[in-house]
Image (cartoon, rainbow, N blue to C red; front, side):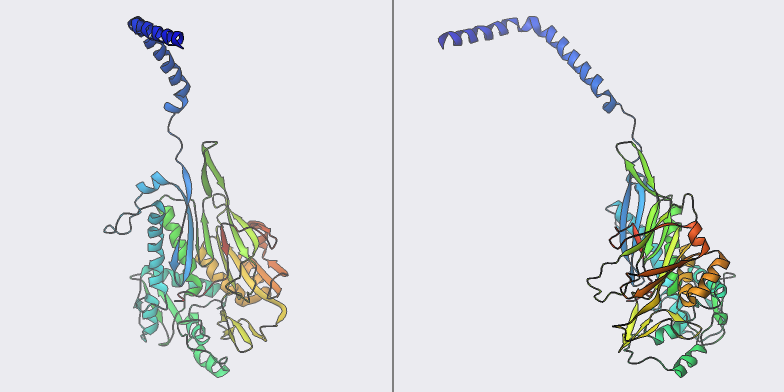
Length: 443
């Protein structure tokens, strides 16, 4: 041990004695190591900036008595640099999701303020309360919604009618929520129909936006078009803001823009795929709390190559009422004044019935209104009109409430313009599912 200790001390002494002589060599060695490290790390230290990291921002909220969802594909840094300010006095958004949520909610609130039948300050509520037959000033938004509604009403011969409000309220699908103990009589219906008819309503854009009724008691219900219009408004706002890749859905009405885009770090490039939108099976759930919707079809929407990027569905399987043994749909035929479907012994009923109608169109407002109209028209009239107008329409008939057996009928345009796939009952959920419309503003 003593010898080992001595040897150690000797080596240490030698090191101290030779430190000055080896300092230049040490510097050379460190220099070579640093140069080698820099060469190896060069691809990382001096690499050009990568392509912006586009990602999918998912946001949601509430509007018009239902929920909305949106997916916006964008680069976070670019997004924060855009002028998406909603309120200059509000606190800055804490995230990109919050920024987009505020931006979208502002557009939706504007439509709600125009078309709500539940908010007394809305244009529609004020117009409904007025007995005047003079021009009634409204916002540009309200006039635009009514113009679309009247256009669809005319094209469908009144199967869609924005003046159906008193009949909707009669069956307790409007603001009137008092209990309904029995179905209205024919006399009650006939009396209300005196104030129903799209030909009793006018709209103008100039010299100022305004509506005019020809009968004092005419009232409006725009729930069959307002959600679709709201989707269009959000889509247009995103386009204008330079955010062309999005999927927006309000109460099941859906519109896609561009493609689904996501940055791939492995390839250092954007992966782009079509948006996938599902159509639900029209099943009437016995236990709504446990019910998990099943997808029947998935449609691929790529609006970069196809303009038909909106989908709306109208059906009887979500929004309905039951009085005793009678079950009836929320969709009222303006021509008869009665629900499109009244089923006796609803708990045990069987037999094929129309469950849902889906419409693909270039804008969501028209798809929304046409979906209601084609449900009212039924298969024979509806398909004939769809083919005449060149619209993409899909009818779904179910054998019973379970919707395990479905018969479909499609217009010619649907078969040629829409890429879709029938799914099994255990199909995975798509980006969005188009479902039957619930009534607007169901607060």
